[in-house]
Image 1 (spheres, rainbow, N blue to C red):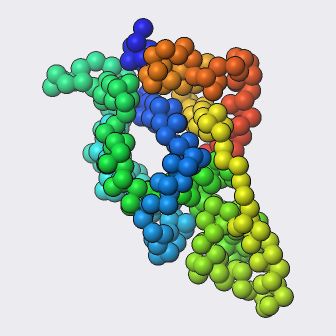
Image 2: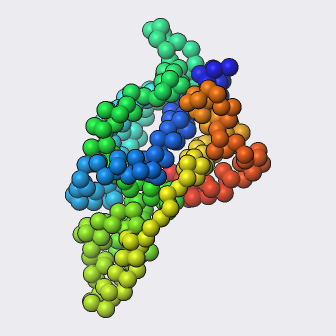
Image 3: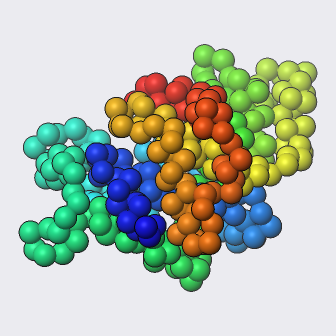
Length: 308
């Protein structure tokens, strides 16, 4: 059975909207690791557009502002992703055209469309089992990574989620809270983005309370900025993504078991190398141990999803 055939079987019984999250996440896991944990990834981060305080201050303060500026239209989706569409979704108007379209997509889409073309799920499967979306071609990715929102995604958001199991926006909110700033949160954020201390709100936190208090604050934050970290392994990156999918599915009532999570990563591995049988990064993990790993490594996902 080919990877495409296996993936077509895998999506049966699952909503198209969830598949549009799960399939790219599993198939792009190695690319995510390359961006955050290899020398090539360091080069990519260094060549992203220069950090702009004005843009990144907005991204830290509002997840919505950041997501709205991501070039989502470059990626395959069952609906055209753009700021206008996202605004309609956020407004929650059930009569909005895009909301009606999403309701129709909640029904499984397996066969050809009325116009004779492939259904969105068929297109998604074909895309990822034949090398991924064109947006990930080298020359096009060079253009994408020059955008401030993409730079924030690569340089801050993903590393922060893996290293600290929280979003940079949550750390920033805790670090600059009017009710009482959290210096440990600011230190964790400064590990990822040392220049964050120059933004107005973090700078005010560090310099508040007079010289003695400011000195004590810098004593907490500066060591974190200079801390050397071991990059996560490919296996650790995949565990983080796999546990995220498992807990997102659980949160939204999708029929996704631990063996199905593992199978999705196996299909992705086979699509890259037809000579392999299973994903080598999960190959030595026993069935019961894999399920426990997803629950354990995904505990922070439960917390992140609690308010959704």
